[in-house]
Amino acid sequence: MQEKIRNLIGEALESLNIGGVAFVVEHPEDLKNGDYSTNVAMACAKNLKTNPKELAEKIVAEMSKAAFDNLEKIEVAGAGFINFHLSRKFFAKSVEEILNQGEDVGKNNSLQGKKIMVEYTDPNPFKPFHIGHLMTNAIGESIARILEHSGAAVSRANYQGDVGLHVAKAIWGLLKNPELADQSIVSNAAEATNIGKAYVAGATAYESDEKIKKEIDEVNKKIYDRSDKKINELYDWGFRVTMDAFEDLYKILGTKFDYYFVESIMAPIGERVVKDNLDKIIDSRDSKMIFEKSDDAIVFKAEKYDPKLHTRVFITSGGIPTYEAKELGLALEKFRTEPNLDLSVVITANEQADYMKVVAKALSLIHPEYENKMLHITHGMMRLATGKMSSRKGNVVTGESLIRDTVELVHQRLEARDWDHEIKEKVASIVGVAALKYSILKQSTGGDIMYDFDKSISFEGDSGPYLQYSYARANSVLEKAKKENIFPDPHAFGMEISEVEKLLYRFPEVVSRSASEYEPHYIASYLIEVARAFNSFYGNTVIVDTKDKTSSYKIALTFAFSFVIKNGLQLLGIQVPEKM
Image (cartoon, rainbow, N blue to C red):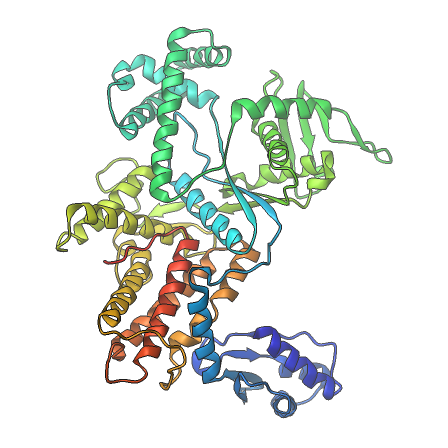
């Protein structure tokens, strides 16, 4: 529809001998101002040095000669805006299209034939699953789903540090606190929590005691060369336990990965690539090199190629590959693992932005064919509204504790429901995860988030549970209509055009924009808007009425809303309970 209106405007300008002007066609903020609006008259008037309102009248008169069926009215507003009102038949047809599409509503083929790998979450074994991992997971999973809905073949990847000083700190903590290495505990979560405590003990001691620092460095060497039986046993157990605990969280969060890349394998790949390209001349005219020696270390002086970048060490003077070298190896391994990959997307926290740019530049010099096939998306931090980074139980906040505390709060809200315990548990988990995910996804990815427990689980207002409740409400209406033998009929319209209809047809546009900009928040904002419109419609309209001939259209509209809200939530990685 947007394209049709653009063409209509273009034809009118051509008839008036006006050309070469840029203009926008968009939805007005206020639905009363029509369904689309354009600034074309004001854009043209500036060049033509004429009155924009008078020019708008001429453009409208010209467009009216060729207006198509779906346009009810074209009018001039304000200083020269032109507003377009769509017809009642258009909205009825859009409802019918949504009913026909069902769970495929919003799908498009903009990325058809594209292979995309999305890397996200990236928690490290032997360390707690922290809030940052929760944020990266929510954003990455949603982006992956949106890209799939746009026709791409998407694979999900997870990169994890299975070696390094953090592992040595945890192993040392387990050696010094053997009660934390109790392998008789049944729960993965409980064992992983103990390993997290051991890591904290080791990390604290490493920073405060020089003697212990040397002990942990020695443990680190033994982990690498697998020379100590006790350490090997603790490592193998700890790796399995923490990875299993992560998998338990992924099930709760609705994520399943296709590939797991680990640091111990990426390190030698990256090291080999760096050494193979040491002192290699890129441009003989200015003797620019990729990697070069500096104080016995191997560095990449990225500022030579881009003044916004800086020098990074890829292999230390001690011969150890750094994070940069490992990321280089990882990037190459992804393109080897998925041949003909069109795009590699990585989601991390904002603080990794600078060094990832340097890695990407180095890779583009080694493999120019990958230069436009890498995308790094960063997110901000999450803070608690209380100002204290501790859970409601006074513990340090981890991603797992935040999920658990939020689910527990929802469970308390559901206590009055006359449901089986098992149903309450399931709904509390679904709603609790929705509260967290929506809080993360409702704003653009780069900004920080202030998380408020109570607001996040509210069944009213700007929250994930509110959207789920809206779906459950629509579902109850449909159940009631079924009992009354009232079935959806998109041709039985007679009522005035509702705000719900004026928003539902926009869903594919929103999905398309979210895919092109890699921004789930457009979908989140849209869902809140359409849910509020439906709830207002619900509160002011008798939907199920056997005496009302338009009731079957209202049911069709309710069905359409339920398809859009359910599909939109699924694109955010949020499940919908049938009742709340």
